[in-house]
Image 1 (cartoon, helix red, strand yellow):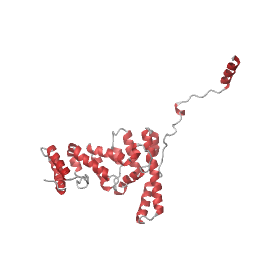
Image 2 (cartoon, helix red, strand yellow):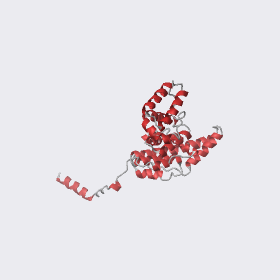
Image 3 (cartoon, helix red, strand yellow):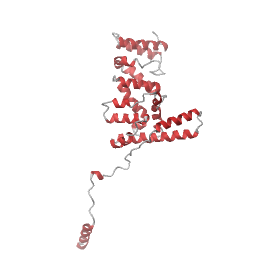
Image 4 (tube, one colour):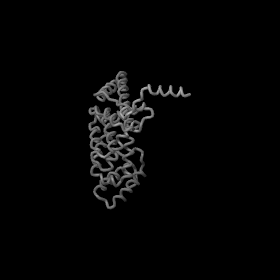
Amino acid sequence: MAGMVRSLLLLLLVLPAAPALGASQAPAPASSPAAYRLAPGLWQKRQAYQHEFDASGGRAGSAYEAIQSIDAQYRRFVLAVSEAYARKQIAVIAASCNAVRGDPEARMFCAMVRYRLRGRKDPTRFLAALPETQPTATALDDLHRAAARIDNPPPLAASPVYSVTEPIFRLMVAGNAAATARYFYLFHHSDGAWAGTAASQLETYLTDDSRALIRNWPVLRKYWNLSEGITWDVDANWWESTVARYRRVCSPIGPNCRGILDLLEGAAQAAGAPQ
């Protein structure tokens, strides 16, 4: 037995000691997301292929395949950035997002992620990254397509359009004039993937945040046409109760309330609500 112990001790003495594992040497988790960089001009290429496909009446198979390939690249981009956000991997987000300045689709998604990372304290750069021309407004709908067919996505990738538009809506309710302008611009110029959600948000704003709406009306009245911007399935009773609510909240009726009530009463009358 003593000889066996001595042999084991000698073996331990000749084996090299394992190096200490420092912080810089710690292995990354196998599932750790990596940066995904989009090629420059990718969104512009997609628009060109879309134009070709539309001009062919849907018969340009090569253009359709190119569109699908590009959408798959955006899908991987949204997924990579969303996973990095969930893990608070700032370097991965920076590596993925630093090269997307000329890409309206990726740029607005990255700006939303960075706005969240900064605690939603300064919306200036986020709002500046949102589309502001009619051609680029379609990037919101392109972002909706990028979310398709992602299995078990992290929250931001599951609904990227809502992830972008929900903070704009919150900023608008809080009275941010720039957010109000961008919200309604996207509402009126995107192709419709977001239209139902936006209509529900505006209905909520009208019914649940009446005091904020009255306070913000000098800005809102420039953009909000009630015949377009509420919802399509309310009936005359809804209009009647909404008008009655604003008459109560607006007592006494000031100039902001007068403008709101004029629009509400006109819309209620068109819907057949009793006057």
